Length: 294
Image (tube, rainbow, N blue to C red; front, top):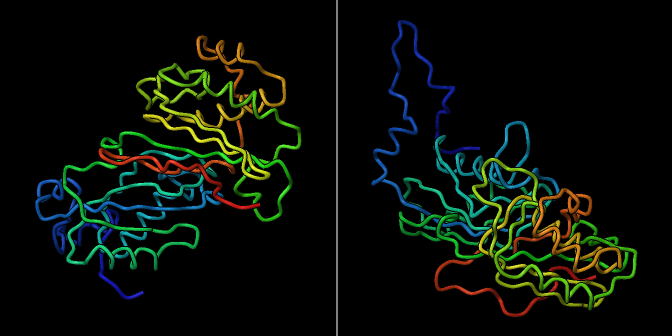
């Protein structure tokens, strides 16, 4: 591919005699010249099946890592840093993830979108790019996130990467009633693996909606933020309620006591979608609809 030439950190090595051909452009130097950079907001959709989650990792294929690589190619800048609104687990999808990055460019947002998409694999798409304030932060400025989980009541050949097929009969009414126990502020230490990066396991759940849509059961959870595996364990416990194996009493115990019991019922990542990240003045879509028809 033809494009701007850039140098990685490893390529800035001294010439014989201890001299650089040119001074390396470091991340620290970039910070001091930030006034020359513009901040861009990205709206991203992706199928997470082939990826080890959002967050960049060494020796693993991730969404953030793939977008970062594409941006480095497009802008010729090895020090671009992409910040997402939050992490999604391995195998989890996104209808609209939000991220931002700073770059020195004269390219229009629409041209940036097209160039990034040209460099990205088929299962990651930049939906929109917009120039934003340098004070905007994709994660810190988010006011809420919504996730949708899809449970299928029948086997599906085409939708297996996007649903959790449960063979057992599920009592929808019991699941709907039990879901309301998660509303409000609760401690979700029993619904997450230990994560040293999380300051607190308390999460505010603003709303939970459950809907039948043909052969699908849709579960939408809206909250201030979510911790590792939390949504999938809530869904897993609700499925156990639907099967008749767990009760409201069990849920209340998990919310008020530290236990690893919910981990046994963690729902698979295939059915989970990050639906929307909202910011001040924005709202969640009112109608809950399936993300795939089966």
